[in-house]
Length: 184
Length: 195
Image (tube, rainbow over all chains, first blue to last red; front, side, top):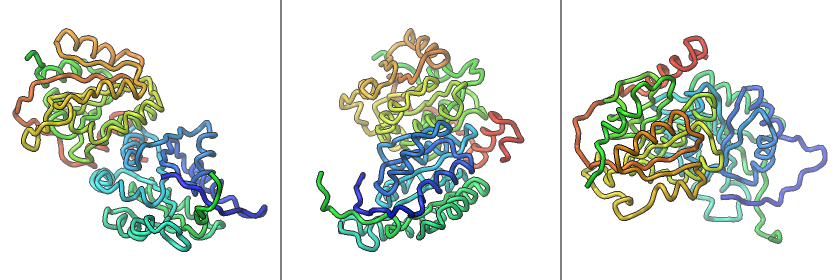
């Protein structure tokens, strides 16, 4: 579910979405699927603008797991962008990664953490790391902008070189909190 | 009642298949594809219901010069109807989807699916921007399906009405890692598949 945030970045802030985009490029990711999140807004725009990538908007997050499996069968690498509520939509289709050993690289922006203003986001946000673990997905954390490149590269290497399922959880503290106060 | 025999339909589509890449949805469509001949370039699903079309899309985007066919059932595709919208947004010219529609969940006791209640899958695909979407009820229509699968400008959608027969199981290998490896090796070669 798309959202907006009130976070403003200072002029010298590290452009962590660009660092993730660079990491995806250097790891030869060609298909990037997503259900939008405000935290992924810039990365989604970078992927759409990149002629070496195909950006694939999804109707629901689990579609991206099938897409990634098909990409791998065809010799391409894929990444899947979502917010933490979308993890709840993925449970059964994660079977593909668990039983076939398909590489899966999920980039998950977190809701329901520090400063969350929408109580309906809290249960799934809080359950996200454990839900992924139960489904056999390894989780990594991105807390600080300066770590984005290293952590994204590590996540991609674990996914593609070890043919395993990895979710990089991007902290709400890094993304900012939706205020529910901006004008529509 | 002039609905078709599912095994005959699939055999017609997969004979002389050349370089066709096939994704087979879970249940009877996977058994039908196996009955037509187990093949390394067929990826049969034993689970992940609702995902067949998306696997086909990922494959079609990765291999734009190859023809890709998804063979699945009405129950399977109903679980992933949104994927038709996602395919429509990408419009891959090399992708065809064939739905073997018996209006039943055949693996679980022949309960009616939504198509038995008149839900129009071909209409959904048409509304989602597929280049062509047809309902096929006769053997004469299968030749056009075959022509579309091998030469048509996609994405194409064919909803083929079949009889709700319970046919002998013809099972593909169950080992998902093996199915994945053999597909990549046959498509990409031994060296690329290992990377």
